[in-house]
Length: 256
Image (cartoon, rainbow, N blue to C red; front, side):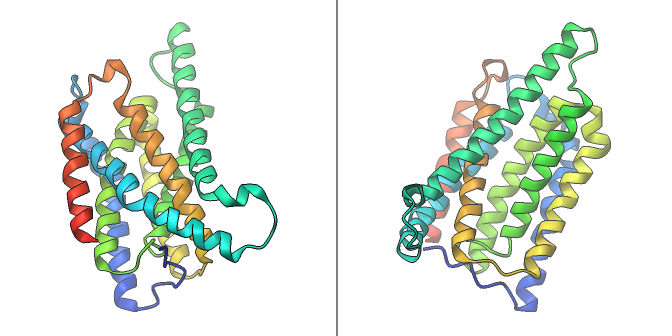
């Protein structure tokens, strides 16, 4: 059951989550240096990282959200039917929003290519993408404080899954936006993690809201992973994706 409404008031725990937040910023700042990720067929490490992120969502996150849904429906007496499924609706919303963002980037690239401007997006699409992912990253930074379960192990598992997810996201964003992403985009996204964490250290939110935030995150993770793994031109490594899924699933099950 989600048990994250209480903030991490302990100074030692705040510092620990802060170190993990800094670690996530380094992923965005230095993932571009990992040139071996850019190969075609797709790097086995990117596919492995995608598998880790998916395992975290389906094995660890969604079961917790299901428990939170049951608590929410018993606490809320408003007779609105959609509240019975609000966690899953929010997860679907996260998936739809990030699908829309990806489509806008693809369409922008196609138009610029047809006009002889190269395989890049327009400035407007770039800023919409960066703003959206900055909010996404700030949410992840925030949830370093308000996790679905308290404790160091929960924090470590969340950090590993999000670090793998950031590597995949960074690769996709760099591929879409090229130099503008390297010049400014990655710095904004890295900073957003720290901003989200800082807000979390000074703000307490209700348990039901934590469930909603994690649901949105789950939907975003699933879409961002699938859009990177499924396109035929990626020539993704299924065995590496499956291995990442299996390895992290086993780790999560033993950590329960």
